[in-house]
Length: 346
Image (cartoon, rainbow, N blue to C red; front, side, top):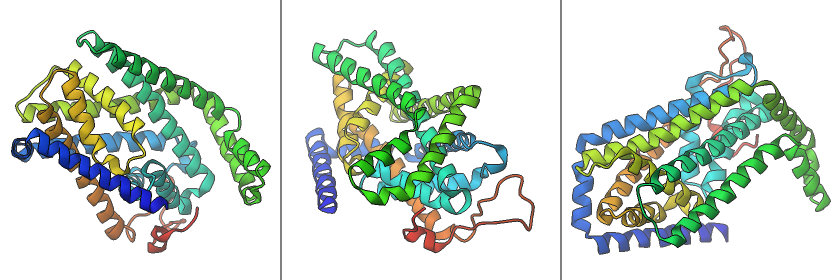
């Protein structure tokens, strides 16, 4: 049933994209897309820089230098995990599960899960801060309808409350609490994960207690990643000959992030991603057709990296070694294998 719903949502999104192309003038939109030409090169480069920065932040979330994997295999896991998440139902959850599976052979379950929880928390906290900054900066330049302002205020209030609750809860044994909840619901299978859940909770508590400055650095790196997303849109508009002030692009990107979160259940954001660009350009008094072109250009970039990640999955499994920097030749080397990509549980 879930697979049928996934396919249905994807088809509905594709139909919405077709309607947008028809209503806004398909030839004009594609003309804008083709205008990019070599402009796709800096766009791909900006995304690569964002991936590298994100991976560096992820690496810093591993506690203890001797247990931190090298950048190269982590980048491989990042790219492959993102690609797999985009072709699996529940993309946001699916890609994190894929990353855990690929880390399990080297880092073990608890270290991998702890690092991913810290990384996702950093992304979430920095994302809310980034959106708050964009909305506050942009609302002084644009006059939005009252209902839009209230919707933004409500969404941001919920987001801030969610962030505070998440951070506070992570200091109070969240995974152990989840296992206990499942056991109270008579899901006895959960007892197998009690020890690992407790270890993950200890890892999180220790990291928050002992790494205050590193946490600040992680937030800064994630903010930089969001900023690179704004830079991407800014460059696209310049290449298309439709430049906008940086503060306007910042506002647009911030609001687009909100839309992506609200409609995160739509597979690959099909139709919603492009429709969000059209809606926001119209809301900001800009040409909706240009917004659709920007959305399609960014979609092409996403497809490029998805295909690249799948190619790495096919070609790189025999060459990637999860070694820590302190390991010497001849010590333990764990290579990812083909079986890892066929559903091994961590």
